[in-house]
Image (tube, rainbow, N blue to C red):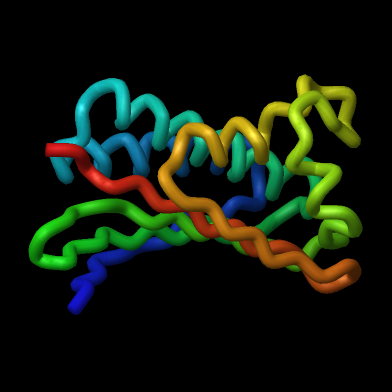
Length: 136
């Protein structure tokens, strides 16, 4: 059985990205993640929150503490009702960007976290779920 303590951060302004980062840093530190893993989790959260702001204008980041009894982790869900992603395969390629950025947002977030799932429908929005499990 997975226990899930959770919370949300609404992202509708660029300053909300900072709130999301701070919230996830605090939760990750309380869970006992290493400094390196806290940095990875916060970086992924920042990238995914920024994607919501840049591409959809607004959305929600939800976090959930996962505790299986043997493993402890964190699950982050980023959900928007923006334009959606027409070609998921293309946006997951390193260097691909529609906003003149470095194209590291989604592929970089995937590398930083243990699991990543993306669901998107054109005209309806996108949901990205990432997980990181605590080592040791």
